[in-house]
Length: 383
Image (tube, rainbow, N blue to C red; front, side, top):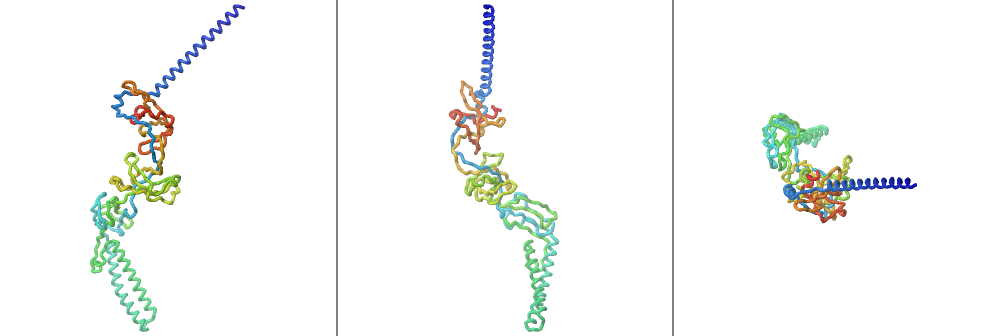
């Protein structure tokens, strides 16, 4: 009986010792994992590294942030400020004295064309003028005879019809010569020219030359384009879902995708009333502010824009302080300063809208807002 009791006590003690050892090992392992995880979330940085990397600290701040709607578009000018010039007649280019980028004045010669068709046009005009003189005389004679009841009415009406038809032809030929800048008065004197001069109808810059000396052109060919850049504006495409938040007079901040910090201020001037059935977007017409420098903009320049529709209070941090890793956003928060070392903690944040290099933090209530964050240099440390 005593032997059984002693043996039972021994076995029970062995079990206790084994459980204790397992518990101790598990506790040590958990402690090591905790220390390792804490180490992974912390970054140590010397003040020398901080200075050499030109890093900076900032804090989470509460500001009035504009509520914005994103849109895309391009630079354009009003239709009357853009002229595409054609020849109106077959011919060969004799002169193009300008290059793309040259400025021209309204009425200034920008091209000359040699055209045999122009010669035929002037010849047809002179023939029509001579025939018109004869038909006018015949019409007046028949009218007088008809009034004296000497001739039949049909003879009078025929003469009147032929005269009016020829007069219409002469008027049409004069209009054609006017389009070609041919002097009707000069042609009436017998001066026929093969040279057709083309003049700029507006002040502006030459943005397209689609020809060269000696090239054959037809009336449908676009030879030169002249653009007046005095009224540059933006044509934006806005999604249908945002339409009810947009109205005339709202501020717009536009920027090139590669230069988001260089914004151009404008305001909505017109809101379109037709929705594109394919893209489900609507056109927004915005005018640049008078003090904006637009010299480097060209027609067709692609722009991104943010339309200011209101103001809200929000907690923000510099966008540069946020680093995205595997779809999550992180910042480096200063935890402690030990001697010459900064202790930074990798902290996950949830972000909202971005506006002018600042990003809204939606989980700011869960963060220590008194701690400084690394606003410059975080990307290199986390990546």
